[in-house]
Image (cartoon, rainbow, N blue to C red; front, side, top):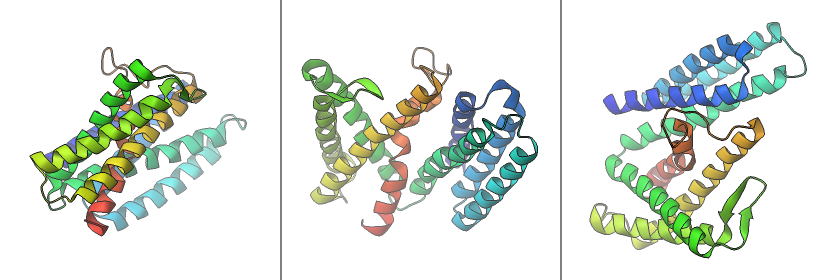
Length: 240
């Protein structure tokens, strides 16, 4: 339960950063209410009650649709603000909540460390390869500093990280598992990073927040991981 509680806290704080980017100061009340709703949704998923999560998500969408209908403030932006609230529910409670679901699986700790190693080794290798050999820009409109060479190096690093996990603490994995998970989760980690960069560019901010001095916000540290926990969970229950 301590682990699930930590996931709920992290999701709530990250939601606060997300809504700070998309909802203006005059929407502070809606922002706090959406954070509370997101925390409740995360609890339902961490409680391993996906049917209750579906019901809660449905209720949250209906409640906020009514709230913004009668508190629209500005017709030019109301739909954008409502869409941001709903996206926040999917981006953090849903995706990050799968971290808790992953923990409660057989070999749950190994799965979590596997995902962390795949993403972190991939990020590190991508940075060093990109710094040394990067010539062709990967997606300059979203992340001007990332290179194709760095992205390819990061994928190789992620596969290497998966193979190291198999040798060091997760021998139940096969080499095929390592190749599929390393490449798949490594790619999704890079996509998650690009997705958060898109959100920041769309809202004109450099960092999602200031919670981690020198490193931006909590969401900046989670971006590469958010797209990986759910795929790892479904791989674990459907393929492994």
